[in-house]
Length: 541
Length: 78
View (cartoon, rainbow over the protein chains, first blue to last red):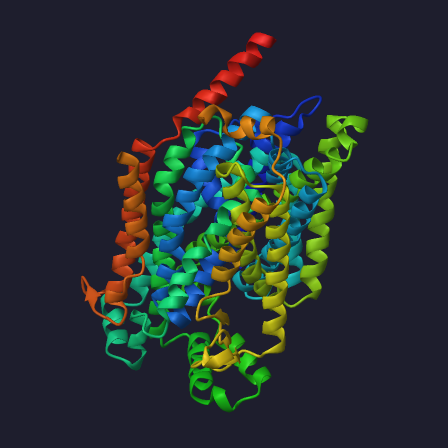
């Protein structure tokens, strides 16, 4: 129970920071202050809150779980590729969006698109697609909170109650603190996790009798493939470098880029981003791999046994039995199990709080959805003019309550795996939307019809992949199931982990076709007025 | 020339991410870090250095100037 008490104290601290410590609103509230902290965040808060916003539960629990079953490849797939691509996109796109936001007062990406391409309802279509792709993150955040509290308290805090507490805490500080509260909470959480991640590595390492012995034991065992990438295709590995393109296309990340006080604050963020990723992901991946040497935790042995049965007998099993074994072998809780076994109770509580910090990253998504709704729908369709700015902020707050209640209600009823899958699709979906930003900021010839084509293609591709994966069951570990092979060329395959197109993950053709559609459709359609284009490119001619 | 070199550096680092030469090696560096993980750890450090080069030599300072000019104009209008 001690770890659960520590986590509750942590939640109280978060609530205090979010609601009281940085609440400035008094009298009439301005939308820009509530939703963007008056574009006034300093360099330290900007770096850590932007990084913290991008750190979902998956980064912590999922990375070690993925490494437990797939080995060191996890770091190259998800961390080092992000360490290059994400800061690069912040450098190229984030700075430009910040400057345009300052000049023209944009608060959401859709506001910029509407202005840049002189469109109205196409902007609304983009808003709807962004919102639909974002909602699963909020739901999975609440589910993660419920599961983590349940695990940390050894079942004393039921799932429904844990989820309700997390939803209430997040909703409260987003409701009262807006962007300022959210940014400070994210900063606090990121610092906490950076500190305790290193501590976890040391404590678990000492508990396991040193990593040297464990690593060498794995090297000399049949599990030595976990230290290599021999079971991963180079095409698959390459495909993953397209996934981090999604980061800058996420509305909550782009909206965060608008909160910096000065453009120079991007400098530290861009430089330190790869190091922050290194500091958090490397211990998680390493611990996930080393967990395979732990012999005195029955739950970990059960996972390994499920993995072994799946690999040796999976081909002859029914798809449902394979799915069940996959669930049993999933390693999302290995970090928690290692902490329970090797860390003292109070430290397990602190580290549990650190994990909660990552799980609660849904705060920025809730705020972003509220900002998008009030700016792109409420204000755009006349609500701000008719009712005023104070009502606009109140509408945003009401939206925060409604979206949190909706997410909690869904979290209680739906199985978690559905939303984990939805998030997988959402990453590819947002990556496929990234050409919108590149075209808007770097290509004078882009048009609203090109933007519509990209958006509709993204919807089609995400739905098509989801339907394919629902119809064709995942095969056992080993060769993929070929779905379409005209002329003997494997075009479309169902792999154990998803779908492959010419051996690549779907995100590769999705992004490339998006870019192609933007070019072709824009060349065929009418450009915005010269005066509009000049506002974006005129000064550079 | 400076910008071309930076673009080449970005492309080179992107290609270096695909380290096929360590693909099947389970060698341990310092006795406990798998070589593939060690390489990608240093890759992250290299990415940070590349970002420092970009920020130092290719910073879009014209955007800052544009914003400052707009702010000055708005202040004068008030």
